[in-house]
Amino acid sequence: MEKPTPKGPEADTLALRYDALTRQLERMRGMQAAYFGRFFWWVVLTLAGLVALMLSGLFWGKALLPFLVVSAGVQASFYLYYVDFARAFARSLEGKLNRLLGEETLIAARLEDAYFYPLDAAKFSGYSLGRPWGFFSVYTLHWCGVWALFYAYGVYYMILTLYDDFQLGALGNDGVFVYTSYFLVLALWTFGNVAYLAWYFHRQPELAAMKKLLREAYGEPGAGKAADAEPSSKLSKSATKPTGASSS
Image (cartoon, rainbow, N blue to C red; front, side):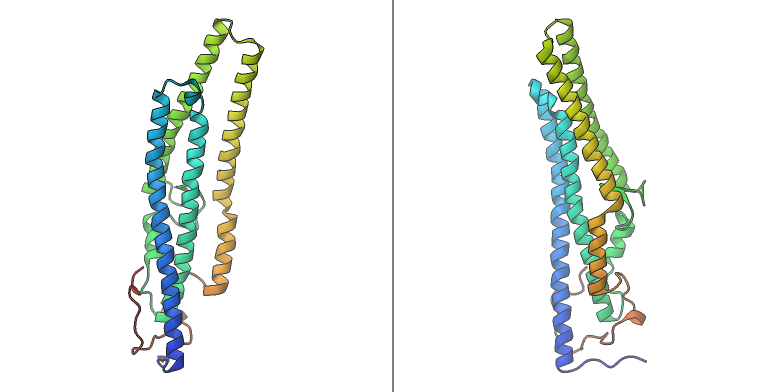
């Protein structure tokens, strides 16, 4: 039996709740779009910067290439870290709004899981273990391969320079210290950053804590069918619907 449509103060309260949730959803979608944009622009700008350093002819410019490649990957992952925050929040908001509406009107979160990568699956930055051959995963592998070439070029350049200095007898104790320190620091820098990213994106502890809070506040995400609707599941037909309320 269909529950009665709220009227009077109850309808006004429901409309306010709907409006507040909708505004938060719009904010999260804006954040998601902004950080996706930053991610893609960062990839392009990084490529231009690495090419410029490689062609500069500067010793330290080429020596820094491997370090900058690792930092570029960490920064790109940071943008996706914010994208996942926005997606998780938006998904819970959509579920809450769908329960208020009594039907699954907002399905953008489900479409994103199907089209991009599943939010709850383990991944390495943009490479999803839940969809390893999805386009976003292959796109991530593509750019990792491009960055790896710059990384390898920088290491190769430093090895050649070390060999030339050794052949010319210009290495000395200072040179040995500089090259040893360089390769040691590079190994630690690379391993430390890659290991942390692998651990973080596999476990995603902050995202897990966030999902727990969202479940406590808004219920299970995606549960928006009429059978799961809250007692006040229908908006008053007389209530004014906020602009963009049906947008996901």
